Image (cartoon, rainbow, N blue to C red):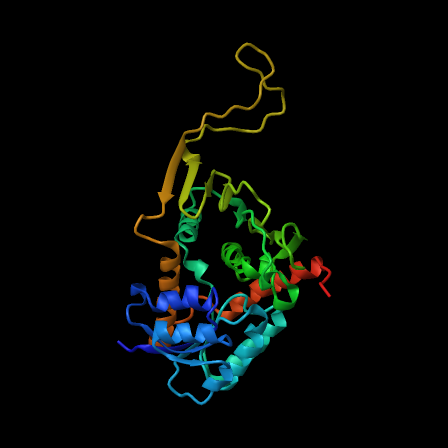
Length: 357
């Protein structure tokens, strides 16, 4: 099996704790080897040299002379994703960029054009597409047991105060660009990537010490599609679900670890027809509609031996490996991510926030 040589740009929470963690785990299964790391901080370079037994650099441009790199993982701060990825593509590197890919849709267009011009791969690390809970939600919806889906509520909520660089607009911070790419990618997969939805968004700064939002409510709609209600809130002290799906034959509710759904079978339901006269009970008193439906209930639990991070990382990187070694199509394409960025751009347009001086 061909082993791909990787350079990681950045050894922060993404570069080290996500990508580096995967590359040095058993789940990598020999697909990738870290041969170089770039980070401006000396202590991080020293740690990377020891942990990966690799070359280290303080500036990403120092790798431009290397011909042995199969993939560069761009895990730099968010506001650097676009300029550095453009530079890497122009110098002939395949690039996997962390989320958010960009701040504006026209920046994604530039990246797609640059990848086509260079003939190199541009991939985006949207690993939550492979989350077991999301796969289960899709499975239940696609089975049809819930009937026509009316609304899908997605909540990546919690209570937190933040004061790091990811709370600043100048660094492309805020809940929508930090956490939002995960549920937004899932939401658009459920809505459909063939249409640009109508977007209604509300933002607030609640517990943040920066100038970017930490409360986001997004409503997505399109003709013939379910309404999607998406929240990413840092002021929710009682998060109750990750998914809540409403359908004409039942519904689904659950977290990342446990999902339950209930539904009735239309073929078993008592026949009903609209009536215009007042309803009465058996004694002739005014009554309300009462249906005797037979409900079926099912549930799903995340397997005990399946850790969420490891599963999504392995699934994404296995997909990427097949693309790079066997020519398999990317399952998460830059064009799909462009739709996500366009929605987020519209959210920010509707909610202009003042900036710190």
